[in-house]
Image: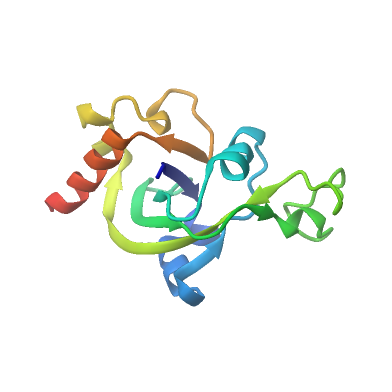
Amino acid sequence: MRYWLMKSEPSECSIDDAAAAPRATVPWVGVRNFQARNFMRNDMAPGDGVLFYHSSCPEPGIAGLAEVASAPYPDATQFEPKSPYFDAKSRAEKPRWYHVDVKVVKKTRLLSLAEMRATPELATMRVLARGNRLSITPVSDSEWRAVTRLLEAR
């Protein structure tokens, strides 16, 4: 089992939106970074743990726990000309972009970016690295345990 931090803008898909979806599951569409795509396509598996992270909002941070709920499959938005995620270079017979489904396990209190930065056990998290813009990053076992401990502490 692996662990991941997956960023979503709450205006696009918040933890509440995902929890309200059928089976509390949403397709993680729109990733257009090759490294993040590769994490989904090559490394993620159903049952992997996910830290559901709200980004590009007044108070970014971890808003809940989730899990990978599907094997990777082509992101249909790459083929939709009216989609903001359309990719004219992608072909149905050779898709460029993949995604997984993510299922909410539970909404938590917000573990803010400031609180994460103030926690020594999280100093190595990639989301805290200067200049990190990846929407999906791996999380180590020890980082996962530290985050879940912080979330349970209050």
